[in-house]
Image (cartoon, rainbow, N blue to C red):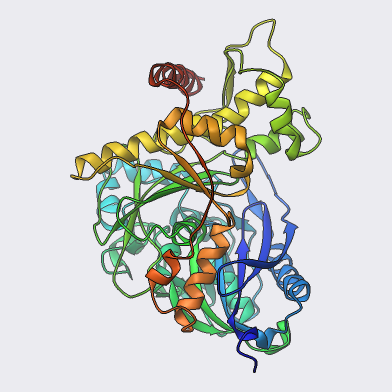
Length: 502
């Protein structure tokens, strides 16, 4: 086999709004990419679902297409890396492989009553200490409990060992290996409310509190690990699956944030900011959560994380809900047609507010409208809302870092689809008062999965080799006065308070 050809890696990037596959060369450069949209299902307000068969079909189709575009055969791929929308919860029959219900998406709020009941029993500190998470419907465990309690016969079947639970990575590995592998990695497992992240094991007390049978659970491995191999008939040859990480930890890895204090923000459907804290498990006192970082070895590593539920999805709403634009690409030109938002503030709390607010009952609001407000002002306010929410996260993160004896975040590495918007990135730098750095490869979520796979198959020797590959495309420096930035953040905080009162 020719040495050049076998140094390619295939990343499967299964996201909330689409499935993508990207072929990378050993230098981390994109060789070919394929993408398909994923159908969203909204059964009732606050509920969000995907069809598990759609997830698998779109992911497999893009994998085949990316290989074809790259002009490579499956036996010329050294390893596959998988990265995925986290917390999205699936339950299926082990014998037939049939899902017992649709996938319940991370944005879904139906499990909030379960969380409220656990909080009322004073159990949040127990979950926080063991998992680093707060009790919120965002995480997988309460979604799984809802499935077991609601789907007829599910709990009895689970107790008989007939069902399998998994996040999207687990579902994809099950499909890719023909049902031979039921596994996950530490980053996805850490988002379930069921894993003790200090030793990366499923916790009996937490399982009992959520009434989850252990028989349902996948094996947990490091993020860089040979999980198994694909069935040859799927892609034309068997390929090892050598890396798995939830999308945000994968992006942190792809951004080469290997040292404590380095931070990244991914601008996707939501926005997710993570700061590497190394082997230190650090609880936040500012509304953030502690999560497992992608781990090349069995040694636990951690990150502080803040999650914005509605980031780029606000642009989709402008397109599909308000019909203010025909395509998402039009938002920058519409927003730039006015010098500022004209005092309009848009808080897109369509599914509540995530970190650092954690207000499940908040709802979206547009405030500051005047007779002179236009759709352009609303579009600009919508775009700016992404930066405001991210600025609130970074402020919380810097306070936590200082409290732990560290320094505030000095620069923010950015990735994800919306980071190509120069207006947004400049406004982000202005609000933060620190440089915002955009790398040459912004598909860092997929790149992180590829790097993890490359480490497990020996394509890369160590993290230093990966750090050397990270390259800057553009740095946005703040130009706004700190007084003006502070005034804008005060206005934002006032607008947020109004959404909670709604």
